[in-house]
Image (cartoon, rainbow, N blue to C red; front, side, top):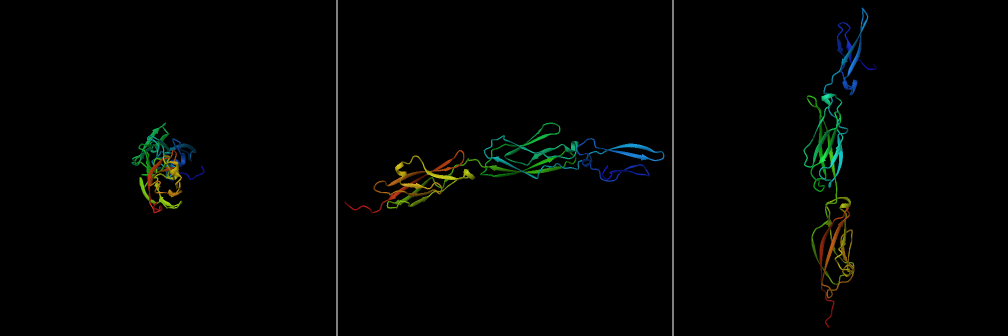
Length: 281
């Protein structure tokens, strides 16, 4: 009722004829069995026959995922065995034609876990098998394939885009472990004599570096020099005297803003160069 008939009867022969393509999924959805109940009228004498036509399923629907791709975020410090649930595919067919199996494209870091909860529900999850390193590979692309039980089987796919989130697992590093600098003793306060640069392989706050003198430097030495915490620029803050102190050993720390923060260190060996500022006595 309400739509064009799919099955008609031949008035001359009485044969039932398929007049248009039968679509079991459109007629009955997931209901089983799918039956068309007809009434056939026979004239002379007038009789009514009740006919039930069962529409059997064929594998004409491929498995379908909710979307063509799925984005997943995984922290690079996630331990092996971490589980990330996935949404499975659906198949409009019935019986074996709707029984799905799953396969994951080859991966060094991930495996697929498929569990049958009951006859109709399957749990699908992604399992981390080996630790991730964002600095080596920041994004992994895998393909999850669902196959039904039809013959031949039909398949559907979804692309898994796995973004590796940064963890603060890299300490800042200076270009050199030791910097040697010479500075004349008559350098005026505020003279810039070195520009330090430390790099961090992490990203975001884990990459931002702050520079400072270490606590091992005596306070009287810290009064002679200033380091810019943001730029790493070192300049004089007081007057130098070769006759008083001929060299300074400055320990510098570069600390990132991660939680917990990591730090790298370098040493600046400053040699004070003599100038002719003393007359003979």
